[in-house]
Image (tube, rainbow, N blue to C red):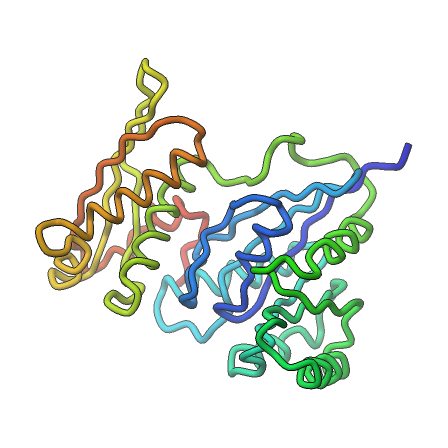
Length: 298
């Protein structure tokens, strides 16, 4: 019988590189929220993938970008802390976008790394083969990664091969989580994130990232369903009007989409009640940082 393996993989990269999509693909089901918009991931959330006798603990970190306010600083700090604490770093590059200021900063910071590095060129279905090979050659010279993979996380191309290599790279040792676990996130955290996913994806360019979701109450009913009350925090009255929409239609659509996703996650009926609150300084609330697993950043 082969020995059990378990280890941590920090999934890092610039915003919108496809990190959360890749984590979901490796786990085999949805554990991280996904959006075509950058900077969607805020918390340092872990997805748990199993391959043979290996348990791969994938730390889906916020994208690394130039921080401008406290929440930004906390997100970037979480990403780098994840890299420092991991057994292996998985650097995800959007091959279609390639070199941005954020990517250049990450490459520079990884120059004196202490951990093995696997380079993943994602979204290869959007890039010509000749360009891909040139990008791979350039980054291999600059980073000297232990391995290079060209994948499409959204399409699933190359994901199985990457997962196999990650499995064999994990340190020998007992599994750190029960076999059935797919994430370390609490149901309350997941519920809040699934509602925020609906806000980001439904409002597109209408609302900046000046919004957060808090799960206020959680009650399991005798009939097997769950009643959840959440508040959506925004910075200004004008943003509140956007979230609610004409006649409350937008808020109802957000609630309907979130309720369906949360019910699927929990495996039981959900009664979801949303309300919107204006708080110009919600990102200065220490308890909110704690709830989404971020450290308070001075």
